[in-house]
Length: 227
Image (tube, helix red, strand yellow):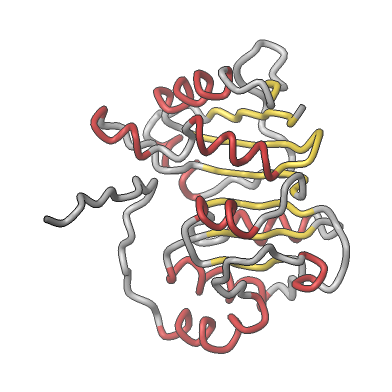
C-alpha cells in the first residue's frame, strides 16, 4: 500500500498564461543576464550584481512595474524580484532593458523554497510584498502567503533593522496580517497607532492599487522592522 503524499500548500495558482512575442524574446535574450537560475545553493549577491549593496527582495511582482520603478528610484540598492508567472517576468525584462536598469535580478520560482534554500541568514535589508492574493474565501485562507511559518522564514533572512513592507487593498487580509505579525516577536510594527502606516515614498502605485481604489477599497500599508 502506498504511503499518503502531502502536497505543500501554495499561495498562488500557476496559470501558464500566453506569452507575447516580445515577452518570449525577452526571456530568450535577456534572462541570461538578469535571471537567477534554479539551484539549491546559497546565492552570492556580489557575484550576481557585480557589487556589494543592500539587497531588497520583492515577492510576487506581477508585471514588474513596481520593481523597475523602485530600482530606478533607489539605484544604491540591489533588488531581487520573485514571480512564478512567465509573462510577468518577460514584461519586467523588457522594462529593465528599456530603462537601462542594472540593479535588478529575477527568480522565476516559488518564493517559499527560494528564501529557504537560497537566501543566507540575516542577509536582506528588506522584503516587499504588494497586493498579494488575499484568498478571500475562508476555505482558502491557508493559502495566504502571510502565515506564521513564512514570517518566521522572513525573520531568518532579514538583517537587524531590515524593513518588511506589505500592502493590500483587502481589509480582511490586512486584519489577518496584523494578527499574524503581532504573534511574531522578531518584528515590531512601525505604525504609531499600532496598525497601518502612511505609504512610504519608495512604493510606486500599481495597477492593482488603482483597481482596488476604483472598487472603493482602502489601501493599507504595513511596515515592520526586524528587531
